[in-house]
Image (cartoon, rainbow, N blue to C red; front, side, top):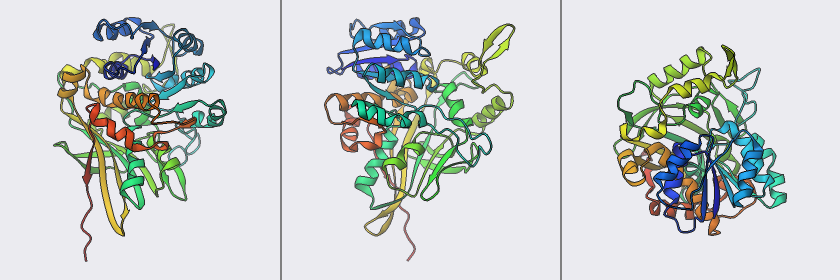
Length: 407
């Protein structure tokens, strides 16, 4: 398989590191606007000619198409902030390459009632073009990271193998990671974090469809496995809520994330000051987006691994009925930062995000996953994916949470 990797940040580096031992990987073009960053990652991979470094401007569709044609790639992997999704998605279609991303095209809030009704939803642009992809016989596999991605595979597995009837699918993400030496240092792209956390969260309910609520709403305490323990989680906008109901029969879908009061307070302050805006403003004759300034002021998550301690957990909580009895389970993956640094040289959050994409390539290359159109991870058989998780050193767990019913 020949892949054009667009974006060689923390997740892009982890993708390259995890894919490197795989003999079926013929070529991976490390393409980034910051060519020095691409060359830095290339150097870490050793003397391996399969990883050429190239400049790319992801805001320019022609730049993406040109590189894809130059290397005659089979698949374009989108590993940049989702503001560039449209161009990369459309470029893959134009050059007849498979497309994959870990976050779908961006949403925009309903202008008149943002906390009750959705406006443009995550992935709407891509799903509107699904028929064109089908007619061309091409596959766009959207939302295949860890969340979305692995969590969606778990939802499909629960439907197929663990439940007769599902009441709710709830993605629950939390951890106990700490970063030494920083008052505030996000362990993932702050650009994407702001987008997810400050947009109105989406919920799906049977008979009601998709609707929105206020950011950080419906706090609950979730008890995470493997020593992480109880973490408060809140509603956050995320792709799973837009993907799961398309293929999994359930009555409700939610996504909740453990942010913490301090993190939430900082995000609210950024919003209050207008520093979360993606729109450029003029500052002393220079046009700049406030959110880009915030991102530039913070440490790069790709270089925080040595200072991070702890674990992160991503997973899918499912509640329903099995054989006439209530059942609750949590399917999850826990990544330990020390283990990820030792094995991959990448911190836990980016490594955990990256491995699903590489498994996806593996399954596509070997014909275990097949399809055309715009599809989410739920559209495929979950068993081949889950069988490969241990092989890729990211094993899953299943925690039974069923409460005893009073007689």
